[in-house]
Image 1 (cartoon, rainbow, N blue to C red):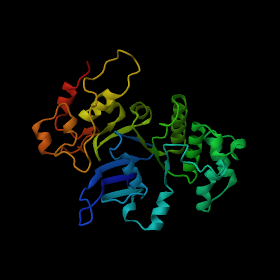
Image 2: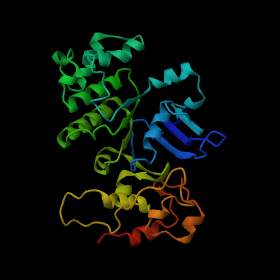
Image 3: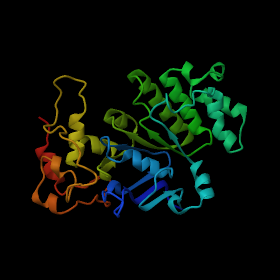
Image 4: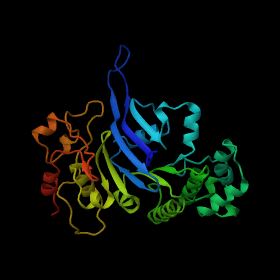
Length: 324
């Protein structure tokens, strides 16, 4: 039996096709992504808007057709499973959405929202719903209110309770605190940490906020133009990043202390067109250390070390993109 609760292997999701009535443009939103998630682990997935994060997580739930590759949940390939098998596996992996305002049905009470997945699964229990709401910090007297009567943080607590209703072992968290005030973000992140410790949940935490990812993740995968360009333990990746893109992302993040040391190369420019990406390394058009080889060959993400980067010159990146 696999040690991973989720294992993505060489996943590709392409949009568009060639043909008489088609534009001929193929957008490689996800292009050969592999990642693994262990029980009780938090894997942070970071990258700019448009890098393919959302397409990747949609494919995990069967919402986007897969072009190639496999997605194994508890050892079962859901891309090759029957509809009934996918439905069963789907109860073991649930999602917490980015916007707590639009993720909840405004016509339903909070009790009804959390009870809905239990009703669909034929497991409804009013006591279980009350316990779920209490566990995430929503009192019993608030259960008959509608989402419009709640703050953003309270709504996100309801969203988390709903995701936990069927007792999943994996939560996919899509920017779960980005729409919240900073003080509320900390409360939700602490709640997620408590739930993970108590229930041994595995988290795929998708975000563009590096500070949040650094706080909650065990490992981090950095995505650029449909591919993972760096992956490693959180402390290694943040203190000694090996890919120029990761270094540029860190340099672009706001600094809380005026005058604090920064790297020379903050991220500049826009990502290339995914339908017409550069040859070789797709980051080379924005990379401050690009060489001729970068245009001729595509670097692979090494799998032989815990901290790896898809870059031909990681040592050059560390030296020439040093702090000032």
